[in-house]
Image (cartoon, rainbow, N blue to C red; front, side, top):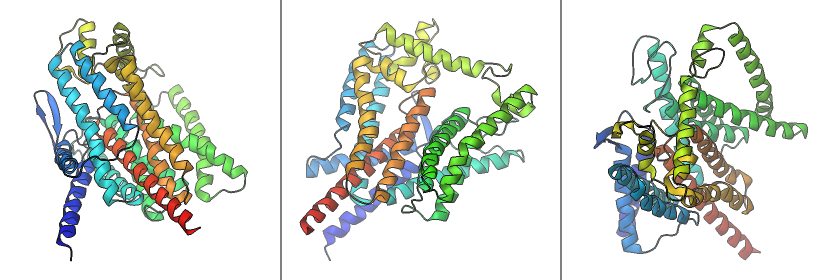
Length: 442
């Protein structure tokens, strides 16, 4: 037996375990996290740091590492963000966020490097869904315990029972769980059971979608409904051509069900049903207060104004909130971070300037649309491509929901980017081998 090979396999297995531990706890904001100089340090990041250190050792030992072409756009974004530090109102905070951005970008490389050597597309998607399932169970436990008066890490404890997992608040939890929901919904709709058995996929779908619902996050539920209605209309085309399965028929009925639900909602608003009015509070609908909607709109406008003040030289990611707060003639402290800006696209413009933001948007476009087109052109079984599509669609909708939120540096967002990069790299590599072997056989 080759002892060197055994050591390498054992080492790779340990690294793999570290990566999946980091992925599992990536959304943990209120547990497995602590404050350092006003910045939140997560245990998941420390675990990732050990993986990144091993990654750098591998580069030193074996030389260059092959990466997907779009990644170079991220390196340019880092350069712009670093330059823009000097235009920030708070250098200390700007440097901290710049290091955080560099950390996330290296994490993408490290995870892609190690996982692409040890895993298949199917194993990655299966394990990823299981990570979402674990956090969904936490949400259901929180929801159930509130009925008996037990607060299990609940951050918004009131009459309207809400689940937040281990995230800061329900909206962050829903922003995380929406990715797992869309992956499961897509695979279930396509009847793709290569990643997990049908029964396990159905349970996973119910868990993930249910977690979004019990978070009662309006953003999360809205994005989930948009996805379901969209896929419902797509299934309608298949149904018309008489190629419908039971699952696709159910998806086809979804737009009708959503329409009926909206009618009941309008009736409930008209008759001022307590539960509905309480849920709509903050949106300014049906005579309710509009504090939540006003705060978001204010965040949009303030971030846009900050960009317009200096469109070519941004203020870096760490300078956005400080710039907005100073713009409003208020005192800035590190504790203010995360509450002033809104919309990660506007944040990109305000942070990197118009040219730096261009490379950020180009990266996202090349990774999602470009990745989809590359995968679609490759030969092979369509069922092998669908898990890749599921990951790409989930990334697209995650990007959409973050337009209604703030902070592009959310750890789960970058974990998902890393896994999308990984499954793309594996699929493109394996499909190329398939094509070459087929050509040689002919």
